[in-house]
Amino acid sequence: MRITRRKKLFIAGITAAGLMGGSALAYWTTTGSGTGSASVGTSTAVTVTQLGSITALTPGSGAQPVDFKITNPATTNQTIASVVVSIASVTGPNITGPKPCSAADFTLVQPSTTYGDLTPGLHNYQPSGASLALDNTLSNQDGCKGATVNLAFAAS
Image (cartoon, rainbow, N blue to C red; front, side):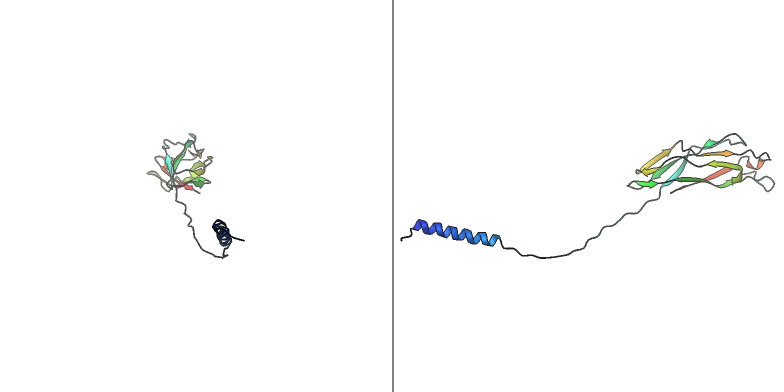
């Protein structure tokens, strides 16, 4: 039987295709491992500042609002659960031993505001629900005349 040149080329092509197909099925297996890391940011302290002023408190005159703003200087949201207002001190020109004036002469109602997740920037709490009143103690309160009530705000 005589093989023509055409048949030889056909058989060579089939053989070459079979060899290439066999090499395409070959592979190696391997294993490996690696490491990486990530960093976590920290919180940034917010600032709480009184809005407006409280003036002309007199014994029994009624409460005045204590409004404030919270500034979140961070570039991300931060959560505030509560703000507590306290009387840091009472100072004044008429406070003496026989004419006292102290935090005990005042009623301070805490804020009733819900805070939650604060975006970056300024947040006003007006009304905040907080208030301050000079109590009528039914005794001489001349020591409180002209007094300054210094408030402190604590956010957490």
